[in-house]
Image (cartoon, rainbow, N blue to C red):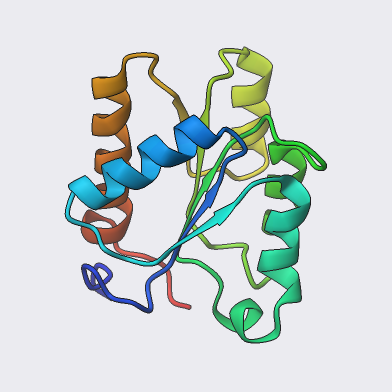
Length: 148
């Protein structure tokens, strides 16, 4: 198995983020980093779960990378993570927690539920852009994914 093909339209990133400013910055950072993969933006936990498990064709493939905020309306990010890890379809999908939470219990619970990475959103705009670029590059270019 090799890294995913860069900019492959079949390699989808799911961004689960309710803050419009953070969404905009993440999308800009991913584009600026040279990744032109399709990005599905999901703005609350219910919408995310509907996308992952309820959309016929999409449910067959699912995203190749999930960037998941913890503080979401409807269903929080920890519950989304719990459900994603509880299903064979999404059990091995890389999930990066991208949150403003500095709570140790959130970090411990995220890893306990099977998150692949936990990143606190930097407050500084430039650092935020760099972190998002590095996440995309690492998980879609450097990392060798599990078989689908």
